[in-house]
Image 1 (tube, rainbow, N blue to C red):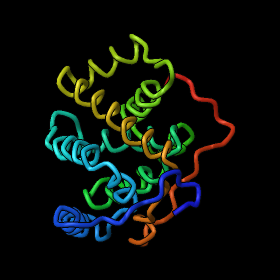
Image 2 (cartoon, helix red, strand yellow):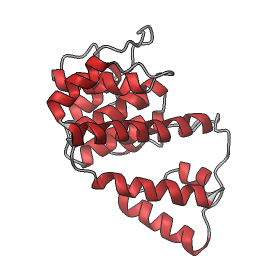
Image 3 (tube, rainbow, N blue to C red):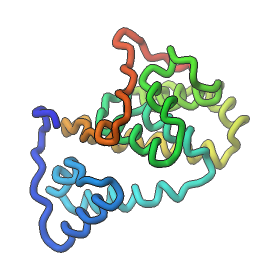
Length: 199
């Protein structure tokens, strides 16, 4: 973990802490260091976890598309924790790990379908300040995905920004989930690439 963490993790204690740690170990095989940061304000952590527990129940949009969208946001915002965890999660959910590995350089990579590229372009456009989503981008995705899936994808990308921006603000970096599983390093985002709203 980087020494640039702006709020140092505190010890996760008590009965509720034991439950949180046990759940983390069962789901992830380790207790993520960010939990110690959020443990400083358990009401916030509880709300984060409550929201996060509902998102996997959304099923109108393809999981791979949502995974690539989240990783595209993480790469753009600079959240190494979310990017690393997203890669780890892709393997655990039997998604295309070879594609997940290429998300940080999706514009240069030739492994993605046109729809996957549009989704990642949409995710980046939503994540700009101000957002750069166009009518054309939305219309194309609406035509291909339908209303329910596009609503879900949009909400999922908004959630990705919710988590990634909090982690970056706190200085939280990768916990090494992918490395612990022996996964190859993620492709690096081209440093000189300007972000545009087109896919």
